[in-house]
Image 1: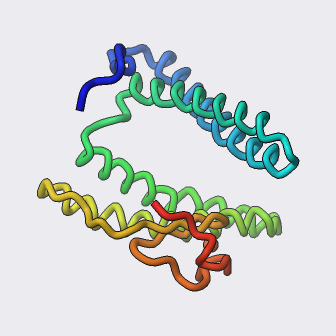
Image 2: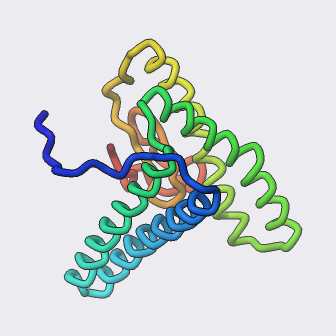
Length: 181
Ligand SMILES: [Fe+2]
């Protein structure tokens, strides 16, 4: 495929600790802004402002390009083999430490909504952990994964390879609403 871009993302380079921390903070901010604008776009669509929605989606995309450039500078984008290992490590950390600890605090503070959003995320991260583990083993042998559809619950993020279930086992959303990839 022809290279459609004149420029590639900025490459990683040796950097001071403070600059690395700054770029990591900027990455978090840009990632959040992008997600926020996508959610705002859905609200705008729902309220009858399709062009405001379009604007939010465009700016969300712009913010995502900043996030990707920051990731690139931080050296956080590797080969598919490396990326699958990094992804598996990230999911495992979220399950074993991050959400486990956050859930304990949410229970202690009796915040039901936080418990729900953590439970949804934690359950989906377990799906992803299993998928990345299996797919990673294939890619270690230069094997692409299968052509099965991937279905994702639009409410909780439950992720399945193959057909969507009749009903999401995590949050109860009907399978017809799952998004197919
Ligand atoms: Fe769900």
